[in-house]
Amino acid sequence: MRPQICGVIAEDEPRAIAAAEPLVDLFELRIDLVGQTWPAVARNLTKPWIATNRPRAEGGRWNGGETDRQSELLKALSLGAAIVDVELAAPGLDILVGAVKKKARCLVSHHDFAATPPLEELEKIIERQIAAGADICKVVTAAASLDDNFKLLKLYAKFPGRKIVAFAMGLAGVLSRVLAPLAGAEFAYASLLDGKESAPGQLSAARFDEIYRLLQI
Ligand SMILES: O=C1C[C@@](O)(C(=O)O)C[C@@H](O)[C@@H]1O
Image (cartoon, protein in one colour):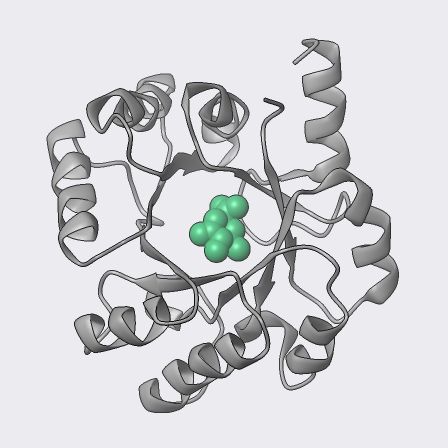
């Protein structure tokens, strides 16, 4: 099956969403980046979508309090979110995961914007995500070397049958972004357009399409 691509909606830009729509299998709606008009964006989506409201501590731009941050995620459930991204470090994780799983799949995420820890540490993070009730486990780190890419790629074989998204950010992590879906990742994150990246090293949906066509995948 062709690698699944998740287009990251980082702005209320209907034309960018429309341009990427044929190239993506699902969207991620970044509530913390889109801002107050996010419900209107959600209502117009034509493919399954992930609701994400990233706190500053994990690289996001949510400016409000934690209670309001989580309330926005729960509001996404009533607007049809297929998946809700909940950070492993979120306060009241068990209650939030339980509330999400009543109506959607729960993706439990962990981000390290500084480095890529040893493989054993990455495995422990996924074990904690599974224990928290994750339907999808996500580990995203910062690559400083080629080896860092392989640490993330090795995670898929460590958890056969589990739904995982694991890759490294940064220019040094681009290899892991491209190979992750081939190693077993549920999907890859892509910007809607070139120049609209929401994280270091992120590729656009068109670029992924070009690469996978080139590789005849
Ligand atoms: O966790 C991730 C991955 C990401 O940070 C990336 O590196 O593409 C982009 C985010 O929008 C998403 O929530």
